[in-house]
Length: 177
Image (cartoon, rainbow, N blue to C red; front, side, top):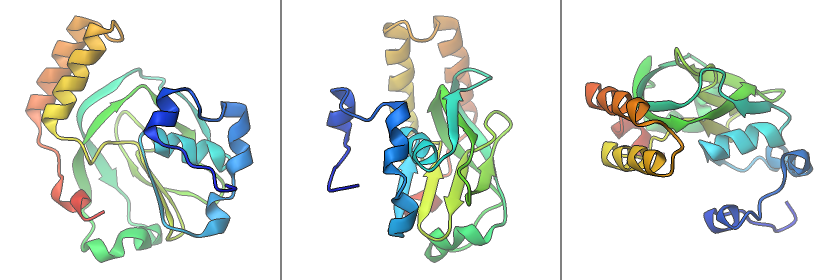
């Protein structure tokens, strides 16, 4: 990537590459360095490596969702984390999603709402649509902010909050990342 860095501040200032420029950053796989993309990072990784990303066909996904985990040799990325569960509850807050994974990637996690919750390429690239780093308190705050800036409707927010109350996220396994 020619020494360039992306960070939150660059994204807030609008200094990230346009969608049609992301293919210029397709050497992530060739570098073979461990790389983790969470939510927006998951989408950027997919798009940069040739996948397709867009608005979720089912709209916003906000809450604690059960993600089914598939057996895959691609989990070598996290083999030091111990036994991989068959499913886990993870915090979600997104309106965009990966529609098609890049060539060479494998889907290793999906939910009833999002087909590509987790993808991996070899033992060095892992993309996670969810937010294993979030707590429920952070998610409640995000929901309030989304309502306050008119991004989601109050009724939708109330339904989301009920869903958040209904399940606990599985954070211990993800803490090992």
